[in-house]
Length: 252
Image 1 (cartoon, rainbow, N blue to C red):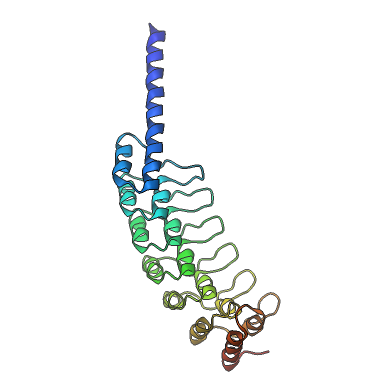
Image 2: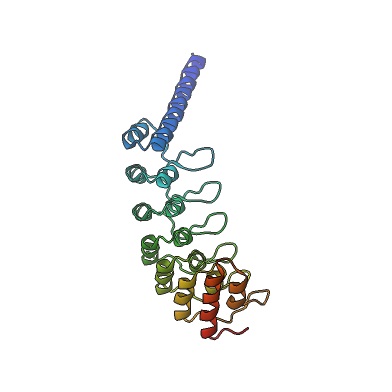
């Protein structure tokens, strides 16, 4: 009798587990297709709101990356972990920043996302948004208290990322948000050096106006002037930057 009862209980557990696994699969499929109604149905049937795919991404990460606002709202309301990370250290917030989705970022922050979380390369959501030149999202994050001077594993800051890409409006917003114009990475490169090397003429002008150190030297003894000459870009762009740097007092 006891054995029969145990078998019945075991069967019940197995059925329950199979049902949950099926519901988890249904939830991931609903997210992939952007079907909020199907996602809700899967959750109502017992799907784990923190279920993960093979890369370690949670349901919330998958929805945030694809920009499915209604599904993200649903998952947050159901208690999804907004601070969870995948195998690459990405959070839902970092993935949203990579996609340039201000509304999604705002929603995730309201749901408890960690503004200072870093991926496996040490990059924050702010760095990703700055690199993309997503000025509105950058301003939102700064207003919410993001560290404008956080550094990745190479020592690069959000300002350096934006300067290299020539994201001028983002550079201005970061500087207004107290980003250190003369911060150094592990190679002793500054934002000005990145802009000069990448031939970002207008960004060089912005940084010089903010009193960037024109004669800072990297670990190899090179200044922004030297890097402008050795960097990328057309010769006329590099010539213009050289002129700007010399006018600002750059030494040979």
